[in-house]
Length: 121
Image (cartoon, rainbow, N blue to C red; front, side, top):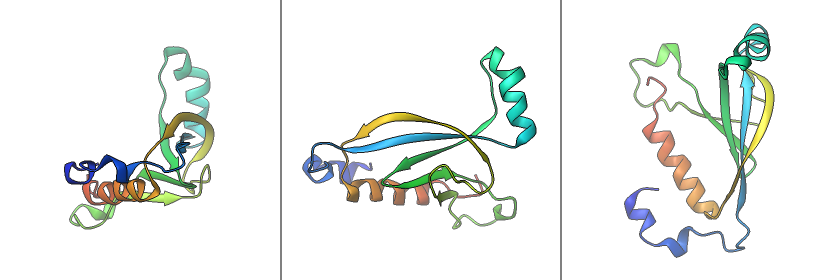
């Protein structure tokens, strides 16, 4: 959260007190990379993956675009259906716990990320 928004912590809290579950979804970059991850890199505690974070029923990840190098206005933050990224092969999900941020605070964090992470970075 940016400093101005975080000043009023009461407005950022989930009113239910239960919070929202946050999940990390892990994807193989492709079939060959998946086999390398499983049979070669895993033994060395290495791997090549794409990851997305699910919160409030949507999955968010960063994706750069080759044709966006001159366009700072195009965000690299992309939304997909959870575990269904169209470019990668779903592998597993890991719980990151719960956030006590309100829906509005989460939306603001995502808005800030969309501005701060252009697709050309």
